[in-house]
Image (cartoon, rainbow, N blue to C red; front, top):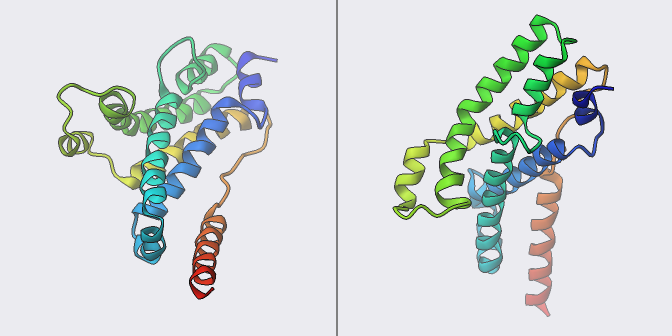
Length: 194
């Protein structure tokens, strides 16, 4: 079994965990900051410190997680390493390598924007930090963050499929979010009525 096969074969793979972690944090952050925010605003106002902290935490974890996936440090597991292993293994067809490189390069374009946020604010605090200008410089959209997660899973799945392993998907956490807000609203209503 090759090193690459062992890296992508098991469902408890650290890179897969990072993808899932990024996905969960993206979903939670975007639910609370995105276009559906007005649905939740009254509940969020009742628990303002909790939600203010949560939103920031979800975004921080999202940025740090996405950074890890394409980090070029040769001493860590990352997609740079997976791509190099695939190239060196000689079992991948030319077409498979082209697909992997296309996904990798598409992801890297978005990842470079993540690097700006991570390296100037979330992991290090640039001495010339200006949050408004930093986001302007990064020029990254919420859709691009979600796209980076999906491209990353597609990249991972291309390698898994090469070894005859099944595709993995992302879990929909929407029902849990709805249930949380329903429970918070019900709990609040019951306490007010008592």
